[in-house]
Amino acid sequence: MVTAVVGANWGDEGKGKITDMLSEKADIIVRFQGGANAGHTIVNDYGKFALHTLPSGVFYDHTTSIIGNGVALDIPKLFNEVKEIEEKGVPAPKILVSDRAQMVMPYHVLFDQYEEERLGGKAFGSTKSGIAPFYSDKYAKIGFQVSELFDDEETLRDKIETVILKKNVLLENLYHKPALTVDEVYNTLMEYKEMVAPFVCDVSAFLYDAIKEGKNILLEGQLGSMKDPDHGIYPMVTSSSTLAGYGAVGAGIPPYEIKKIVTVCKAYSSAVGAGEFVSEIFGDEADELRKRGGDGGEFGATTGRPRRMGWFDCVASKYGCRIQGTTDVAFTVLDVLGYLDEIPVCVGYEIDGEVTKDFPTTSKLKKAKPVYKVLPGWKENIRGIKKYEDLPENCRGYIEFIESEIGFPITMVSNGPGRSDIIYR
Image (cartoon, rainbow, N blue to C red; front, side, top):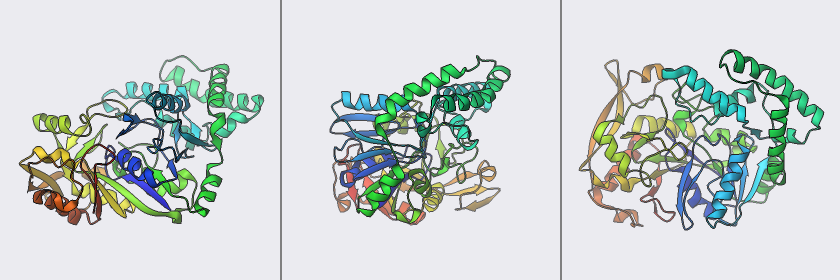
């Protein structure tokens, strides 16, 4: 069976933990989109890890970890991650890389940095990992597929020459930076070839056979619904689809094979990067939640940037779950809220004097003001609780109120950072 694990909101929902947990019964875990521009923080028996490209199931020796064709593959970063986890005692993971995946080039990272510098105060809040330039090249048909590393030298050099002709016009005239050379790019690609060659595979064919054999497959998404380029807070979005539906494309499987979609929601809201965030809070209130949140504080797993903080947003989460096609909601970091006497929950948006529970387009979102319902806190540490009925009454009330507002079943509740800190409903 194929299960997708995706985010309902702005990313940072705790997908890594849920994937790591579900991987115990999975055979294959597939990253299907995005690149090393965001990370998944995982706490398990080996320690604490921030993964950026590797799927979050690499800590089990019975799993195969796959980099799908939809991923922005930064080859040095991938293999640095493998080295880092092995140095902490994790057994060498079984990895396959799609021959149709495309590679993030060093010049993509440079273009990302140069463009953010050029935009100044109008920048997108990019992690400067090269993701937008990478996907721009992919859809302009001037990217490099892993399979092209194995072309003859003349063919590859001809393509490089064509590609960098366009790049150098921008580098020299828009950014006033040094030009690229064919030799420089070719040598980089040959380094990448040597690193990735043992792992290259026709992933689509591999997964087709695995599905026929009845294997359990997890599709792991990056970021969340609000960052989807079609359905999110455009233009402050990422550059690949964050939706479970894209999992079929980014992994190379039929869409009807995705039977279960686990959409991860935080018990409060957080985001890294610019963009509309209606339930955002500021000052001491935000600092306190940030300090207590996540695992050791709410800071980006890739950038280390302080995350923007907010109360749970039922409007955004209901929409985020809907466009994911959610079958199950995993509700994370609930334990963090135990210090609060009262907990505001955003249940509507006021736009031009009218209250709506439907998530609007960005132009209307800019005018939205949160409408809150305040729920009683439970003032208790809930870590270590394994049964739903053992949670404090107000804690159960919080979960059930949110479940009724978003309209999707909360079947998993995470009450701590560890792999075993989970309550099934």
